[in-house]
Image 1: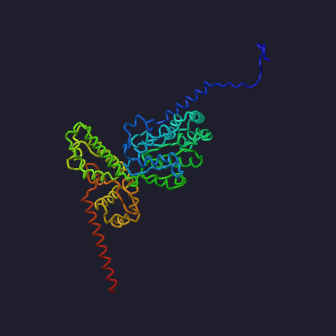
Image 2: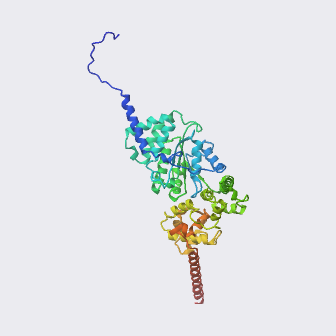
Image 3: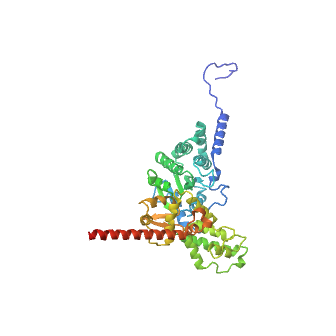
Length: 468
């Protein structure tokens, strides 16, 4: 019908040019901007995280199964967030690492491992850009949506956390949610792991992350689930006790219900067997080494905290030394010469103590507890306050930042690390935070005499009143 129209001229009208090259260029630029905002060192499989904490193959099986069942929807709870919490050195990062590796091929959508010692990984600015990048890699169909949001708002990485999460996570995934992509928990990546939330140096930022995640999950009904691992720090505990986070989450404490002493014994048994079989100086190691009594002592000192067991094994298996001699250093039988056997453990203790607002009075309370030994007569925090002449409530306030190393169960102070006392009573290890055992005993004697004198005066006054 339009043959022989070589000389036709069309005037007027509106012409739209579809420039796919320009659109493609904008998308490439947007993804490049995203990559610049990402911190690759936070990935669970990042090359920067050389030799990350890992679970020993025959340990942590029960807690791993519990988390896996939750991920696969086999738990009775329908919580969108699981809070894996435990004291300092309990092995939370190792468990999070194992879960990330187990779920990498199927369920894992993104992983973030914070670290207080890495200035690139101890703040919240990189969180959602890094999650968005991993989403784009795990689900290529979501990449264009992420790019479009960055094109629409090139300053999206400067917005508040909720705005970033909506733009970089919610909107790109919404078409996939509507299409039923996430209908099968076992075959769709929907798990986001956030490890070391307490490693974020700004404590207010820790709660901001929790608020953003819980608010978005409540308002947008995303089929995503979050495994969040941290110490039970005061701000984080409070956040998990308030709404909507309390309703959306389930707590998984690494307590004695998971029999950590048994796992630590397995780890130590296997490690000592490996040393006896493979160490270059294995011919100098007796077959009965170490004795059952020594093993029992090491398990007790670990107090269910894997960091102690891992630290001493790393020290003992040094290829440049005799393992038997190194164990004797750990046991205090042989003096320390150059290497610090508890270096990693000491660094952890120093970090926690350096955050105390009133270290002198806090260490006085801890010194009184340690000086009495297990089952001491003055273990209730209310009794400690009265004994030391503190105001009611001061004890809990002073110990609020020590929840990684001790617990308050029904008002009773319980030490979670048996080795913490060794650290405090050794000035070579604890430095300015060291506790003088003799000074503690002197202080306790003074308060005992003060209370006895007070009681005597009260009795005298009572007798005088009766006489009149």
